[in-house]
Length: 103
Image (cartoon, rainbow, N blue to C red; front, side, top):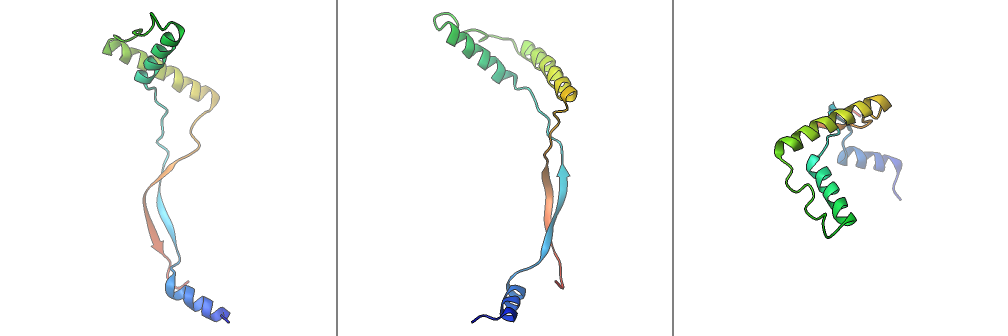
């Protein structure tokens, strides 16, 4: 039969008590992936008209992609701000375990 003092002694000898400490990082920003958007639109064109739509938006110039990305990013940022869809999550970085002695 195991006694309470034996459990406490076992815990004291085999486990540590402490806390994790780290820095909160709220730096998530939703970003437009213009290549994915153009690819999706191209796929929609193909699904609508397989014989003629298979090469739609295949030759979009880099500067036009950049222009569209910047404009869509502005719209997304404004929409997030307007409806308060800011991220409600974060990551923890530079974390470490701090052992509490005497517990």
